[in-house]
Length: 187
Picture 1: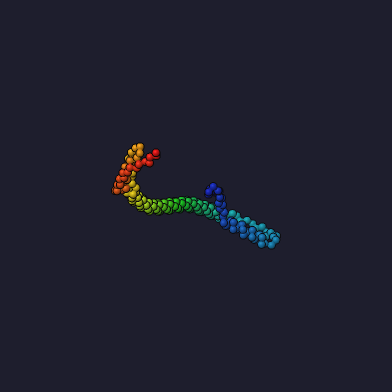
Picture 2: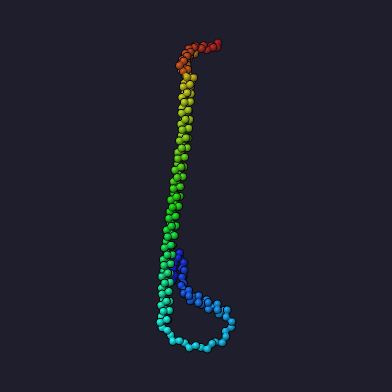
């Protein structure tokens, strides 16, 4: 009888234990015996006892049936064990995969929270700096508008003089300058 296991064939041989044991005992006795002595005179054979022989054949047949039943039970148990091991291996693989996915999700969640928190800290710092920049810019614009002035003026040029009228605005102060500059006349 042959059984396929993972693509390989294995052969299970059933031997009658009694016959094997008797054969081994005879071989051992033959090896230990001194050289054979002359054969004893032949005995007369008894007439066959049909009932005893029938009992022997029946016992042999019952033993064969029992061995066949035990073999079938062992093979069935082996098939069930293989199926169970395969099922447990699948279940273990599934559990490992789920544990790995759970770990990956937790790591991703932790990384996301950390990244969000870092972004929040950087954003707060950036907003504080931006606010400080706005305050400084507003101060400097106000100061420059008060310090920096503007000039407005008119001039009139005649043959011998320059008539200037200037207005200088410095913040809230206004200064007016009116001047007449004579040109030197060469004679």
